[in-house]
Length: 77
Image 1 (tube, rainbow, N blue to C red):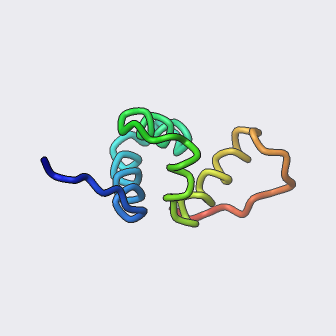
Image 2: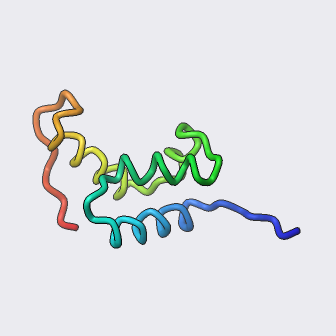
């Protein structure tokens, strides 16, 4: 049985691939579903995300008014 090693690069790549096909979903939704589908705790998956994806989550969160912060600079996707 092959050993499935989850790396930061593979998780980020998978998330960006999913986002490119499902533009109507947010990164938060995609990451939550990805974690559930792959039996990964949210706390664990957060440590695997790149700083760019984390910034995209913060940007989406500020647009959805989920974060109490002044302003998050817009990221060019």
